[in-house]
Every structure is written in C-alpha cells, then in structure tokens.
Image (cartoon, helix red, strand yellow):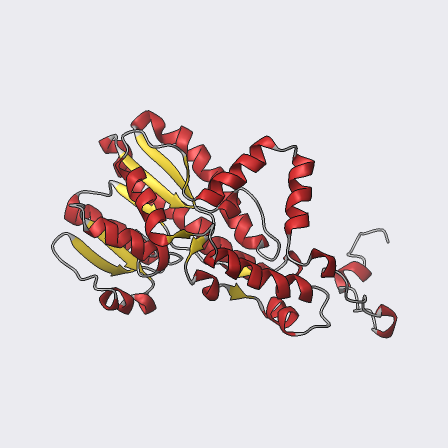
Length: 309
C-alpha cells in the first residue's frame, strides 16, 4: 500500500494490521518516522518501506522485494496522492506534470508492475483510492480533478482488460473525509498570490472555497477516516468486488444527483451552491491600457526560410 503513514492510508494500515495479511506499507522517505509515532512497527509479516511513488527505481525495488519474499503481490492499494489548489489559469506545465505524476502516472506504473504476476497466478486485486473529484470537478481544484478523472478512465478500461485472468479492479470513491488533509493542500505561486492579494481577479474564488472545503471536511456530512478504511478493507475481501465503491454518504448523494438530474440543472445547482458566488468576478478588471503588451515570440514575427510571410 502506498501513502500508508498518514490520513486515510494510516487508517487502512491499522485495520490491515488486525488481519493475517502480509503487508508492505510504504510512504515517502521523509514520512517514515510517522509509522513509529503511530505505533506501526515491523515484524515478519509487516514491512515498512520508503517509496517515493514518482521514482521508478524505488517502485521497482519495492515490488521486487514482494516477489522475492512472498512470490508476488496479491493486492495493490494505490492510496498516495497530492492535491493542488489552483484555478486552471494558475497552473503551469511543471505543476500539472507533478500533480499527474503522483495521482495518475504512479498508480498506473505500480499496476503495470504487479499485473504480470497476477495474470500468471490468475488472481489479484488492484484498489485505487479515487475521489468524488473524479466524478465531478470543483473550482480551484482543476488539476486535482483532472488527475482523478484520468484514474477513473484508466481503471475502468483496466477492469475490462484483466477480468479474463480473474484480476479485479476497484475504485474507492470517498467524498469529504473528516480529517486535516485539507491543511496539506498545495498552492502554486500564482494561486498563493491570488489568495493573499485582494485585488487579484480570482481572489474571491480562493477566499471562499478554502473555508468552504474546510467546513465540509469537518461537517456532519463528512465521514471519519476509519469508516472509509473499513470500506476499503471490505472491498479487498469481497469475492467479486465492484468497479466503483461509493465510500461515503455525500459521495452517494453526488452520484445520485449526477445520474438523475438533467445535466444543465445539475451544473446550475452546483454553481448556485458555491459559497458567495455573487462575489466571484466582482473585482474590477485590470486596466490593460496602462500595461505594455509583451513582445511576441520571434518565431511568430520572423518567417522561417522558404516561408511566405
């Protein structure tokens, strides 16, 4: 399991420690000390390993150890993830790449590494923690939702691809989980500046969405981490697990809205439910006449050899 040292991952790990499963619990190297603080110690059947999920060498070493010690991986739990809080305009290519590298590329690579053994043994289960953010997008969380939408599509395709070998694929879709994980959300330099400076065009987006998400994660609809962890472990033990597991009450409500309401009404209701939406876009537009326009790239101003201008 990835991302096992904190939050939902630690809650899942604690429940698995009460079973007879042999476990490899992984976390980023800087987070390994959290296992000891949480009372998670190594034994013959429990191994704690450093794993930066974006590092190909570390991924190979952890999977190779499972093959060497125990003959392979029967269950892969992709739980590690990060979240950027930023509107689309405030995310540049490197930041999009980092978000996708952790939330999409890494779980797909880990699945690719364990699948040959699962196919050979004609059994296995790949569980990936997704989110309601993979079924509905939220403003200021654009690239996070993009990564989860990508996970949903790839895992759905994988469900069909490996079912002939009795390999199961499940997406765990929690909504708001009662935890402090919203405090660990990342900002890009542009999104941080926009939240801090009231004259920024998107300031109201950040000003209202941050506290709104915090309230939702601490409110009555939020689900304790332990309850979501139980849903993961139950799914792991099912003989014929479903592709999608709606792990919280609000996830089931959002799913019902998405399926039952006309799409236009669905988006209108969600838009009108956004916090203080009347303030969004209320900042006066900048005076572009006072700013010199940037010079266009030379490739756009100079014709190349043989090019007709």
